[in-house]
Length: 153
Image (cartoon, rainbow, N blue to C red; front, side):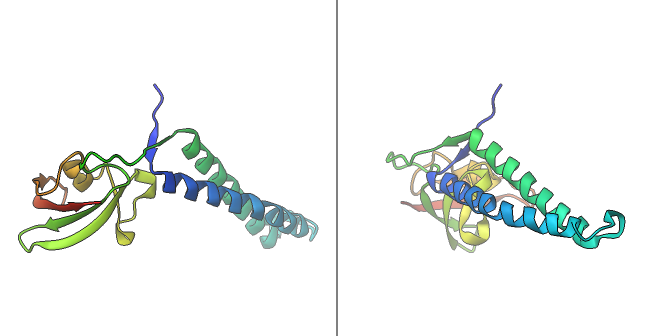
């Protein structure tokens, strides 16, 4: 069974851009490693150890990002008036009626501090496929609360 990672076209582009940036930086990192190796005794060469570790991190990140692209399922915005990936929703949260606006995104793109909410988070799951003026209960580890969908763009 193949598991596909849902993401928006914007999220896919960001991953491609990061891969391009890392590939561009790789030759510089290799030169740093080669220069450190030329310094001699590798057992006590902290420059070599550090350069090798940094190149390893870069290579690991590239493998991870490429895997994300290989298993990406790009979701296009729908116009059915329901909460879905790529859409921006305005929510009224809790008894205080605090208003928050989020873009619904895939797990890899999620960053609540930047207004990007994962569709499979407790809040995301509660509002997916719902319409404006729908009130739902969010079941979250920190406790349950009510959310009303005020707008979907």
